[in-house]
Length: 122
Image (cartoon, rainbow, N blue to C red):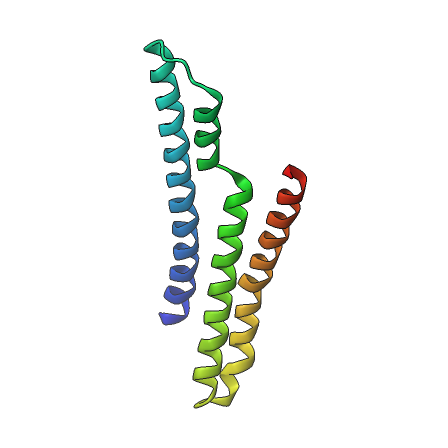
């Protein structure tokens, strides 16, 4: 029974996390659009500074930096967990380092995107 429940639970958790992130990003963008629409409907003039501040909320370059740092932190945490568990059970180090490598490489990729995007805008 555990052979079925654990993998299904792990997959469901990953799907749930992706859905939550997507859902709240959608709600954030929708709120910004509604705010801009309400301001225009009320006849307010949106100056350049206000539009730039609203654009910073969904700036992909800043989001890449945040994601990169977050993925690196998760990967380092998994690696640290592998070392801690591996100190008692030697066979746990390699699998946990393998698991840790995925978020570390994702984090490095996002940091690369952040650096490349920053260079393009400068």
